[in-house]
Length: 388
Ligand SMILES: [Ca+2]
Image 1: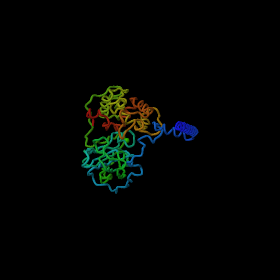
Image 2 (image 1 turned 135 degrees about the horizontal axis):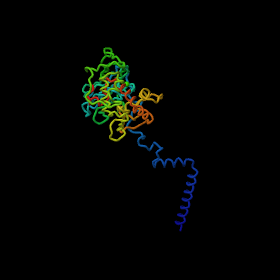
Image 3 (image 1 turned 45 degrees about the vertical axis):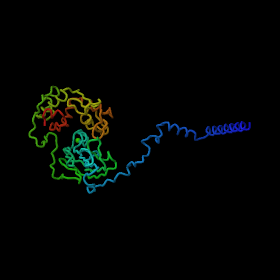
Image 4 (image 1 turned 90 degrees about the vertical axis):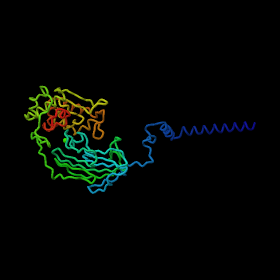
């Protein structure tokens, strides 16, 4: 009997306490916060503390402050040439983008050394649609990269050297070491003015070569630039294109009456479009497609050439907006458009497209891009037709 009474009293006390807690929770100003915290544990996307990518890692992540200070000038001390698990790279850089490079790894890494440079877009330093430089090519055994200024302007370029204290590669096969790949990279840079016609080499010990001894090419429309080692220009082996646009008679008026240039231009035109000014190859938009968003008679590739310069010089639409190049029209990853290509600015692309669908402006752009008919190397058809 006493036990039952005690149990009953205990039950009443418990009930009383429960009610008190209930009243407290209902009036507690922090209750919403508590609820929010519970909600966040269930996966609220607003609360970053539950996103694993934002959880502080035990591995120290190199932040901006922990990057090795960049030594300036050419006297920076870099570690010796690769041995063991290290990767090293030399770059010619313009506008914070590596244009020409060579990279290699130490003997305890499996990555392939190499020497080369970016595509035509990245060799266009002033964004006018034409390449301004060439880069040396090689196996990487040289551990040097050589840049040559093929334009009539001077550009300030940087010889940059990078040292990564690990085997590094961006694609799993080729050695690569730079700030984009490893923020902890040791870096040295040396600025230099690259004058027209000048070749300079960036090596592990710094800049090699002298611009003073290089001849200055004579720029100018109408004066054919002599091609190194080549004799007189010759006519290619392909058939000529049809009237009214791609025939020699029409093209003579664009190439200063030069018969050889007009014949080569006619062959390229025929190969590229068959003389159809509305020819379009937008293969880059397809998965597994090629690097083409190529328009009109000469298949001007807008992946590389859609720019404010193109619109200002070869469009009837009086473009007067801000300067831009193809990188603001298509998404780029490093030096190449992402594939399938992603259009960032349809308005600008459409303007470029309309300009290049105009046969006269397409030919005018071609005159410019071929350096007045003296350099057909931007067109794949040139080698097919054996046009130098
Ligand atoms: Ca250029």
